Image (cartoon, rainbow, N blue to C red; front, side, top):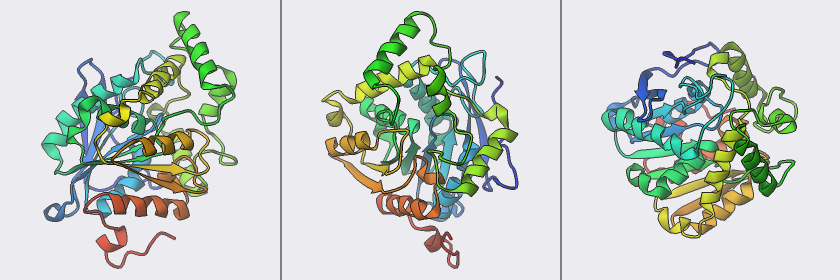
Length: 333
């Protein structure tokens, strides 16, 4: 699929003003779509939030979040990971969510930092990453790549699978067998594939908020080229490799970036217990648990979303609430 050369805008999901679109090419030849926003008041800029999405997402999904960050006095920079959003796909079927290994995403980080963050974004540089993005950034920082990051906030980071019909050991054996048989590029099978694609609001694992859910699904229906379907067997194999790397007993010694983990109490897609365990292993980590919240806390109902924003404001130096940044702005309903 040809990478997108635009940000898709709709009345129900307006683009925050000041957007700059960037075309990047990684060291292994993958073309990526990235975007950045200058601070609303450059003279009072508090730094840059580098925003990293989860699996199967796209820049447009985070327009509301970007508005929140701009209102707090930050510049914002973000990108679509390889294989999703407006970036180049890795297989002939553009609907398949695929990657060879999670460390390939660090090639995306490298060109993003070189092409967008360093030349355009004021320091200090902070990270806000969700789900798969949290996995990638955590691994990146532990492998010595986090020297540019001042602090990280990771929401529902993907450190272990949530509720699945099979144990991780059985998933690993099956994925390894199918990969050896040359099936890495095929969709994950039957029931697991159905769990990976959320289509109906009732019983969904993402959010309690019907308006934000409808905004996501309406956008995906309107922009199918910016969406993907379930992951491939190869993606699962790559994810298993990344998860296993976190179990190295020396991992905690390697991660020095101050990090705030946010776990959602009603999350069934990733393991909240694994997030809590990771936070307890690290010397420079904090942990906030939001009871009742589902997986996508940045897209959740306001009662949960406010808790995320309060934790963010308390952890990121220089942050301030939107009502402080813009006097007279009413709090979320």
